[in-house]
Figure 1 (tube, one colour):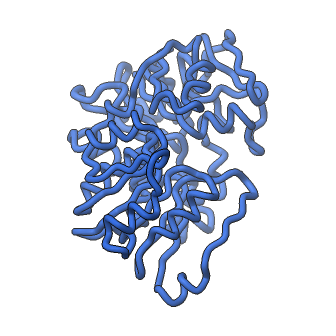
Figure 2 (tube, rainbow, N blue to C red):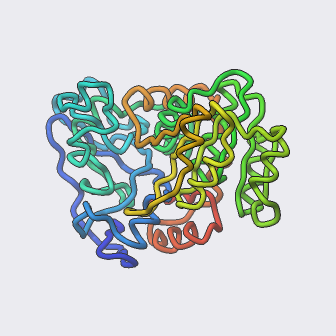
Length: 346
């Protein structure tokens, strides 16, 4: 089969590799759609300390079941249209047992696209823990493109749950990339009365408006802090979600949070990055500052339900499609902010 293998930062090669062999509790999926992701862009540009090349990248995908292991043949049939998350917890480590499966100590055992060959290929082997916990048969009304959004939607649901948005809240989202646009929709579903979205890309802000943003701020033309204070009567937003992943936007998100509000740091900054926060504000203004990472089986299930019932609009996030042979070009294009997500079709 053809596969896009990561060999070193800035080096992806389209190669002929063997179709994966599966175990008795695994499934083989014929990839129909694999989506580009900001995490893939970061890995392509600078590698990853826990990734040992060569590895097939790609972890947001959907497809059809090509082969089933003997022990899961009663759960999945040949031809089933499936959406698959990119990992599953062990359910036995300290963090799994204490209600934080997203921090599972054995996450790398199943992490597709990092320690397990990913979906920028014609076929993918789905590890047994993911088959058991985080693989779903999608109804026929759901496209492969929408189904491939299961993983990022699940991550955002984990984040939106942590933000604890209440009815009538004013929510500010920094960044209208894929994750910001997903959080926008989820904030509306949670009952936010006003959602403000900021970005430097005018085209992305247009998509945010179409998806229900009440106010969009072009940070290349306006001062974000002043504008948000103006919109909120000088208070700041009730809940602020940082979906960019830069130290300066982390600090800005904190500055735009009102007293007794919550700042959620969703975007991952480069390793070792440091930020400065006003501890007096945290203490005397009763602020909540949270980090959030990855997804859980519960958030994956919620994502499956939202995609299946049509309450989540995924198609606007996928702005174009490209063949597997052009996956490197797709990642470069995404790194330049020239798209939201690209559907790679093997």
